[in-house]
Length: 73
Image: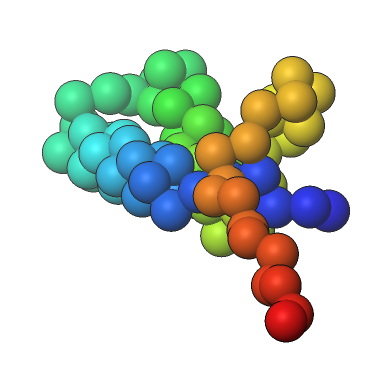
């Protein structure tokens, strides 16, 4: 798959996932909400590691910087 996530997007997702993990570990969230939030955190980590967001693919979004083509002279 073609990468569609830039560095800033990946960092933001990892920070959100870490915040969710901390909220879970200090028992701020529990029960069904904890399970849902941990699932979201896991998805954020996975998509950050592979640099591909399936929702971005569906909507045609890309936060990846545009690579410049090399010109030969």
